[in-house]
Image (tube, rainbow, N blue to C red; front, side, top):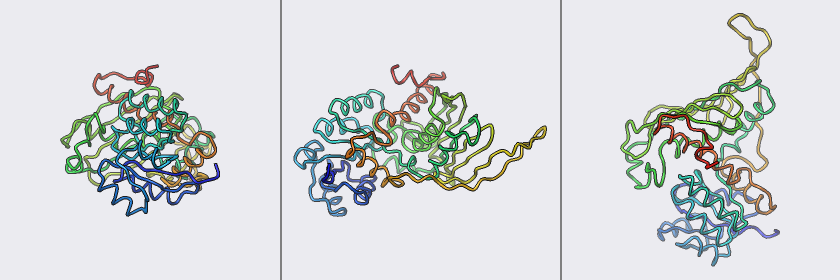
Length: 345
């Protein structure tokens, strides 16, 4: 495919602007159109990003605008409907996190893209960050021995008016809570580094915000490799942090969001209660497509042009959603929930 992809963005507020900037910075694509149910929002977006055509209907945008690929940047609970419509119209799809908020919808959008023979990719931009990629290599290559414990916490602040400002936020039907919206990036990073999750035990609640879903919760994970882990997420705190740590039999690696802050490996010197370690000097592992959303879009565009899978194909992007859906079920029933139980396996 010699000509640049004609690229469209659906959802002209918030993260849609980040996608527009990423398309501008990527090679092999040109931003040709945008769509939003709010015509004024689409016009403003078009003016801000020099987009030649605006539409209200995404499928019409694909058909009339001769669009090859689309970023879906609408509210989470609309992702399946938008993805299905543009896939049926023949466009490849890059969908913001989460793919959607129910297993049925995620299944539907994956099936629609497969039936239309178009690419579906998910957005987990942390996987493109050099520090996170280096941490995964440390686990995959056994630099910290056998992983035994992996944990992450996301302690952020979102005021009540954040949820009140948009009726879909914090609802089970359209958004989910702190895990599905804010914590999903760190959760995905943890499960990706550790090699997948087998089951989940969860406690969660709305402790300080008036919303249908959780503002605070904690998970206990059993990873597929036998290790255990914890995930804590809240949007009801002030002065919180975002940190991930992986502990192995021979060392530890810790990250502050995406940057490695600590990397220690054992020296072999051990006493009854203590093991000596050496601090490692490490550099990141850059992704060939780049970092953050620019890397995500570049990888997606290149994958479409080359006819290969993207870094995070649709079936892989659903993993973090499956973990959260299992957590919701566990919180409601009090039981440990295997991921297979929400995947319909």
